Length: 121
Image 1 (cartoon, rainbow, N blue to C red):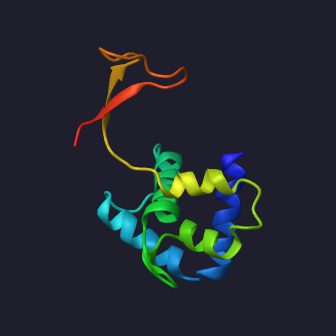
Image 2 (cartoon, helix red, strand yellow; image 1 turned 90 degrees about the vertical axis):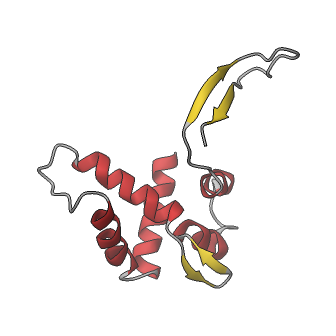
């Protein structure tokens, strides 16, 4: 489900944002250890990292200030996509390093299906 949405978002980005993905690729791999080639063992992982960074984290000037391609896509096509809430959640995620705290607190139980984590930063 999420992969179909990412594929749709990538296709839209390539069509609507033109050369931006090429510029972003140079920027990303320039900061993360150099370019990647198809025969590299880490090719799939590095490309997936690039696509996630490009679509959800890299911001450029848009109609409403600095926006990621996912935010621009939501602005233009948000009302027509099936999994809008899933994409909105992806644009609002917070990247960090978390440590697992547990299922319970000292005074109350954490609701089923949830856990407590602590942001290391």
